[in-house]
Image (tube, rainbow, N blue to C red):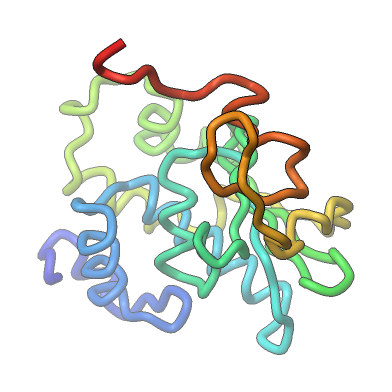
Amino acid sequence: MRLEYLHDFEDLVLSGLTLSDALDKIEGFHGSVAPGILMGGLMIDLAQELIGASILYNVVVETPYCLPDAVQIFTPCTVGNNWLKVVDYGRFAVSVYDKDNGEGIRVWVDLNKLEHFPDVFNWFLKRVPKKALPLEVLLPAILLAGREMFSYGHVQVFDLAWGVKKGDVGVCPACGESYPVNHGKICRACAEGPYYRAADE
């Protein structure tokens, strides 16, 4: 993707991708060039650098919005391979940690730093309507802020059980569908209630 208003950043590399290739991947995966995914890509690039290339890692994100897509675009970690976990704390933060020992790096948007970049700050905190900050304004502002809007710290991810395999599969005695038996005597939908109602009910 070639965007004239990003000409000043054409030498930027995110997780081994040129900016143009990164934007193409964002658009192809997400359906549009979402500013939150670009911001997430910058966060992941920093976390990868800090944890080191030789580490086999998993990732936890603390929001279901944009950041999970950034992880799936810029790392081998996906929801489907169980290397990416989403914990909805509503915070724009990512932890990249060693699969074996849980030692890792957490990167987050630091509002004290972000306020030095007014366009990004106002967009991030939804203080202005979307149309007030079109992509040709917002994307360069995000790239200009770069890593300066983040903080990071070393963490120990203590729930390594997230990485366990699905295990044995059984048949739920309540609904007759398959489920991982380590979830309990019946599937979670039957135990907790489903997320849907059948259309003919």
